[in-house]
Image (cartoon, rainbow, N blue to C red; front, side, top):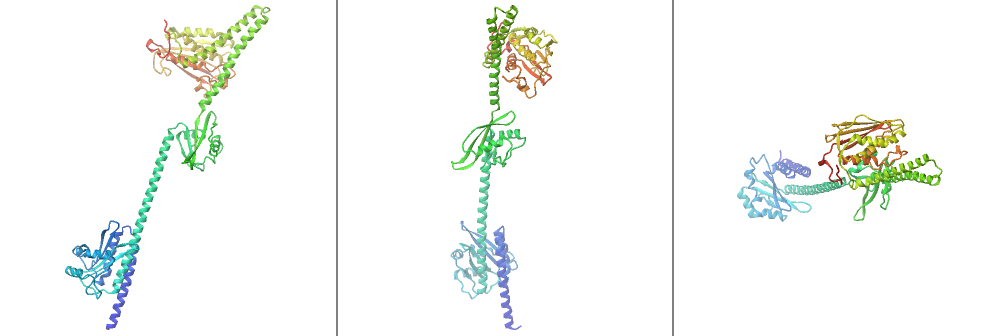
Length: 576
């Protein structure tokens, strides 16, 4: 092969090599940008670059990064594995660790070219001599610039064999330095954006958690409120609902209320229409409704605002006013009933007196006797009604007077039956006593008489014509009606009368309560309540068992009291 052809081939090989170097450098920069660990990737690819520069007799490539803002130097070293078997033997050779001049030159943006045999002007004669002492054949150092700052420097080192560097060779290294600077900048930018993204994400998570915690605290506070609370956003969707509101919603609609449901679009019940009316109202107001039979709710609302500017929704509050409505209804019924009960005997008395005054001289003695009897009977009824009202008042104020003494229950019951015999006979009702109770008890016989008069009078009043009443007594009773397992007597008074419905039975001891099914029968609704209070004051108890249209059984447990069991809170008068 001629010299010319050999020269041409060598040039072609160099051109091909440089193109390969530049392509490899471009690929490496791309890999660096997308690598998860920039320094590890850079170390790997620098070794590849050192291997690629084998024809330049390159033994190692060192990249020194200036870590901002600490200004620390981070070394990444790549060695030509074919030329250097133990890199640690040469690591200390690099002047970047030994000589500040190299660092200062690079930091000032200067290139360092210490290659005595290259034909290129070398800088730093003293430093070149230093390298010769270390056995370094040549050292090329270029700064690595990013678009905004000096990121570091790159050194290419020949130790084992000298190499003649050409301008084209240096251009390739400069290209690599430029590409590496761009890669570093992009990576730094990416890391900055990633940190910003992570910071923003952590802030969003923290704020979200703060909002969730705040919502939980609000829900916890709202759940302690006995009123129902529903918070709606500006679109009418449920944001927060407390436990009380959930329970009432479940009771009314037999399903759960969930957050996000739009109550403004719901319909079919006064519950929804009331919420809609309050939602669209500009002024606070109170609305009472009956969303289901026997349940009365009172609604109110308030607008929620931030600093009186932007709305955060509407707060709907409602409370159960059923007891108040029922009490008011009972009060009205009581006033009506008492008025009727008072008017009836007063009317009879007035009419009887009027007839006696007008026709007294002309009436036979038998008619006069009947008029006087009517006056006496209705005066007694009037007296009993007033006494019941006064007794209720005294019970509430705990001013009931008791005359404690020993008595026989049989005698009390027989006396009451004697008093009520005319009423029983008027309806052809028979009263039977199955067992005699001979066990002596301690209590107030007059109050016990009052208890049995109320119960037996009710049995007669609500029994059908020609019915029957059975009074049963059990001495020394032990069973479910004797909760304290104390010594005492159980009395059952059973009739086969009208009975009580399952709905009304739990309320029979409420004062003034009367079932709508017996409105046609005179009564005040006070009797059973008084009987219960009086039996409780005797440390006893009263129970009701009934089935509508089949009759009622009143069960009383009366304990055998001793002196030390008497209620000290009751104002009493003890008599033998």
